[in-house]
Length: 229
Picture 1 (tube, helix red, strand yellow):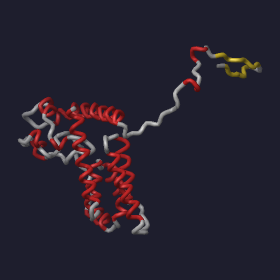
Picture 2 (cartoon, rainbow, N blue to C red):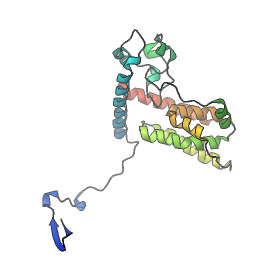
Picture 3 (cartoon, rainbow, N blue to C red):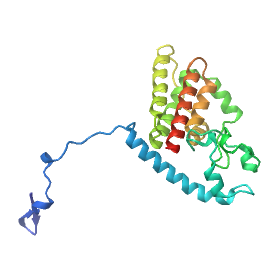
Picture 4 (cartoon, rainbow, N blue to C red):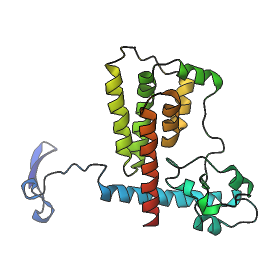
């Protein structure tokens, strides 16, 4: 392969050694990989687990008295699978060092933020005043970000449920979507995927919340299977 270089009023021909030249025609065409691909999902899931191990080490000094980090790592609770995006709420008894259910506990035993993001009374009233489709449209970008950023195996189905339900309800309601208050946005940005699902289930009536809960349960079961594989 050769190119032309203009240098000090002279035109030089720059030749690239044959070994360094790669013909596009001999290479494979670009392949677009789907994020839902099982191999990619497993690899990204393992990367998330590595980050989680670092988080556990940093959390060691905060463990309840009477236990070691190794003991808690070897006994994850049922509610801890999928941490931090689809796990259950933090176990209060575990934080106090009094949870006796260990692996059978339905709440999360892994480190969370010091304070879980939540809406105040005024924000909750605001959400209740909105049509269901408006709430879903408000939640959709945050659900999409959580699904795409964390590459949770199977989470694309949950995202598609939101998109499909919005499409159905948009034909039934022509209400203009209001601007999301910045205080509400601040809470939504901090919520995990399971937290966003909880908001949707609390603000929407009908069959949709049940579908979301069923899909979230499937995601947690998949996370458990991957962790135990």
